[in-house]
Picture 1 (cartoon, rainbow, N blue to C red):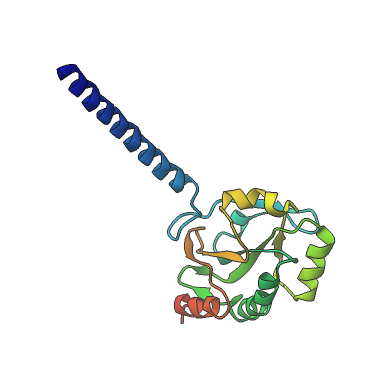
Picture 2: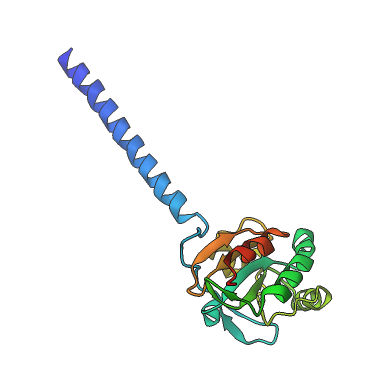
Length: 182
């Protein structure tokens, strides 16, 4: 009888330890699989422009930058374009508490260069920083930023630290108003 009790207690103890181990593992995995958060440094991106020139996100250090993930085939992304154009034109030369000037680093999840370039022109996306690896959902940035849908964006300060995310419509303009220097 004593041996059976010892076996049962041992079994319960082992099962509890296995369960605890699994809980710890799943917690760590969820941290590894989460997208970048406000207060964290934005992961580096180094992709090609439509002209074939590599443009690093870090090359924009010193400015407030909106990292905008989009695609020509994405209707919600295209609906955001007028807001982005208006905001860019209003804030591109302003001084901020978090950097000098504002720009947009557009990262396309397109798979066809022709469609990507046509959308840039059609939507009048006049900023200089358009990049893509034309990898569609297999793009290196999808895993890097844990993107599950577009449009997605991150606003970073002069040091590349994320200060806001997913500011759509007028929310981006309103947020920028709060950090502009008077």
